[in-house]
Image 1 (cartoon, rainbow, N blue to C red):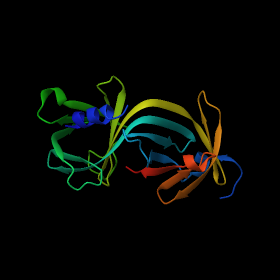
Image 2 (cartoon, rainbow, N blue to C red; image 1 turned 135 degrees about the vertical axis):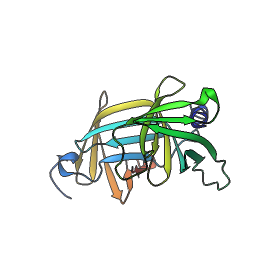
Image 3 (tube, helix red, strand yellow; image 1 turned 120 degrees about the vertical axis):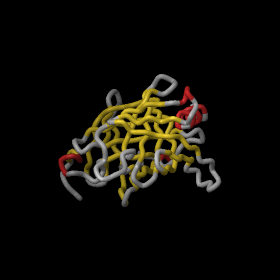
Image 4 (cartoon, one colour; image 1 turned 60 degrees about the vertical axis):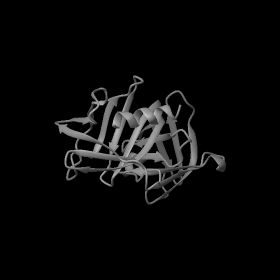
Amino acid sequence: MVKHFATVAVAALAVAAPKVDIGTTGGELAGAWAAKARTKGGLGTYLVLAPDGSAIRQFGALVDFQYRTEGTTLLLRLSSGNADADTEASSYKIVGDTLILDDGVPDNRQQLQRVGKAVRGQAAIVGTWTFTHYTGGQAFWQFTSAGLAQLRVPFTTSKGRFTVDRDEITFAFEGENKVTMPFALRDDVLTLVPGVPEYEQTFMRVRP
């Protein structure tokens, strides 16, 4: 079932202070951020801003689901706003840092490996899990404590660093020119305005 969702997702695609590294201040921007807007095919940008000022930017399939568990059953449905959206079920089992998903179809059985450590005080499934997508690339399922399950199949991954100066953020990704733009942070919403208002991007914080 989860393998089915991964297949469908890709098939449908194709303050004020001196300039400092945000990590040195324990900056509020540190964390994972998913673009609110997606293409019709489900493509979007995913940012990881680390406390040490390093940054990762991914672009690819980015699909949101709602999930819940009942015993050893994992229930998933698209977060499409459609209350009648189909819910699909599969059995799941966690052995150490391995998540095993099985919807009863032999070819769909998957083993995923945990990324990082388990989240203390949360259900064992909460966290990020990686697996090899059928296209050959690395893909991720992230299950949060709030019931969000997010499937990511990155097409491109860029690494770099970021710095903050008052209300501006500068990204310096490998092989690219530095880009500085205004930003606004309100609660768990990060807004970036890259020079042209029409290209404003809004990101939602993805909490464990």
